[in-house]
Length: 467
Image: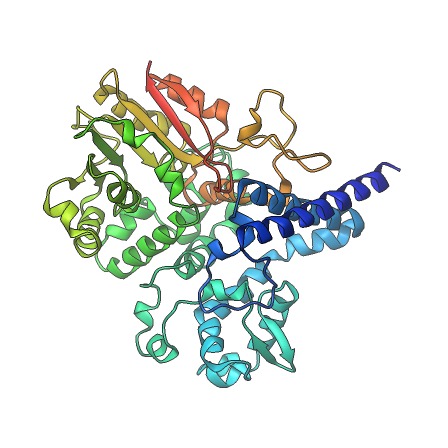
């Protein structure tokens, strides 16, 4: 009876949430899309799912309940069959991405895809791969071996013409969007997961926090950290590709996550924000355009900051020409020379590192901090998947039963990123108690952890002050 009761509860949750989405779509003049929709560009603001906090919660309930429903009604062997075969789904998707299938379909329409691939070896195989993807609602088969794009496949569109893609394949990922990120995850970083068991079952590496002991580094045979490898001679193309992948990764969350991470308007004119490990400064670009009263320093290694200065000179030249925004080569494991920062900002930095290395970074910032300096950390802050009475509801303990309190499949990004960090760098996305302990070890005190509406995966700005 318990199982039947859960089925009914899940069914009711889905029905009630669908009703709510339809109502919100009418109120906000947004759409409830069909899977067959294939816009030339994906515009999430036009869809109801992010229109209001209520809509976001309803969509998470539907997604979480849907997979939980399927897990209840299918034989366990079938559920596990899907899980263990997930790498084959990724392999099919990678072929379609690298072979420009989505871009070809955008131009060609519903034609025999193999006729346009220009790769003989794919002519026979591509339809089989696309049929697997179509079974997961990525692409749609409209007749024998004939496919069209749909709501999911258009996210792979580079926006370039097919002629341009084949004439200059090295520039394929130089455009904005997610294809560069997906290519990186399914390419470079995909060699790591099959080696994870060998790494964590080996006593020499099981408890190592060294970046070079990660599954990905060992799979590629790298004896230096990935970012050092990117700086080596002959790696310029790979480094720039990785920068494009990171830029897309940063777009997984809305700009408001940066805008609302701190009350920037309350800072005095001339206050200094230091973006530690800021890459090309994509986060500060959002901030600088909104708050002209702030001074900003973007710190990273010199090659990356050089790329950043070039990018800013193209997209926001007045900020760098005025000196309001500057770039500075810096190793965050070494002494922090900026002593007058109002804000030390770190986005997607601590999750790259083991606990001991994270403490070293935090200690250098603490040594440079003034009594009124605030440290702002923006990473995923993962809740446990049981109903923990000590976890504030806003941090992911608020989904209705019988869903997991985290919404289960409706909000998995943070947990996937956690394992990505483990496999790639021996890093991790932390829990609130873990992060608080690290801050304490480094001389900081956790002050605030409050999510921003519209983010996914428990992406939470954390404020800390000198202890």
